[in-house]
Length: 179
Image (cartoon, rainbow, N blue to C red; front, side, top):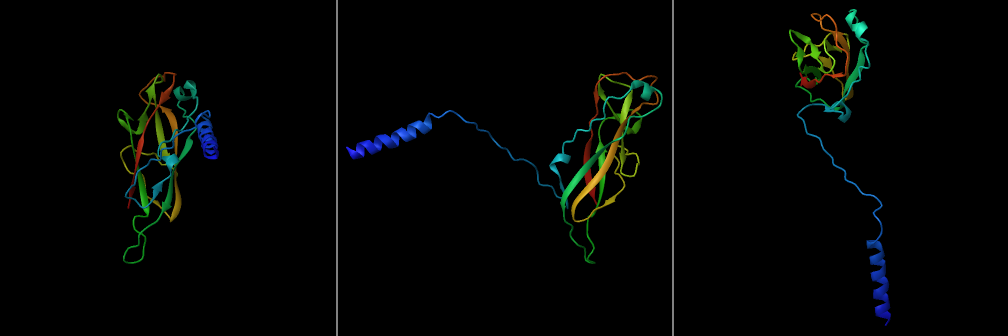
């Protein structure tokens, strides 16, 4: 009898655990890639969104540009091998931006959407315009974290009389080239 009572109590405990309401569950997926480079790219820098804001068409039509908005490519865990002279190897990086350009202007990224007649320009940390598909000037890197700073702004295409208001977006990919 005692064995039967113990079995009933144990099965009641198991049964009560089995009928409890779901109190929440989920799934975590870890993803990424392994790259052959001296630095890792911070996860927030691999798929950025840079808001340029709501820009006045009269500003652009009058020859003005939007306010440049900063964005950074964050590198982390940089560690450099040393050459035969004890100097770091591959501690300079250039960035190559690629994307649809405004026809005839490789320094202006084309916009898509309802808006038209303008394009996005990218500048490096020194204010130098970036030319699409061309490497930027090299930036020296140190061990540990490094930040590659850029900014972007909207400008009217020179051959257009007036910009067309509306929503827009422009997309560029970047590639790092170490030397």
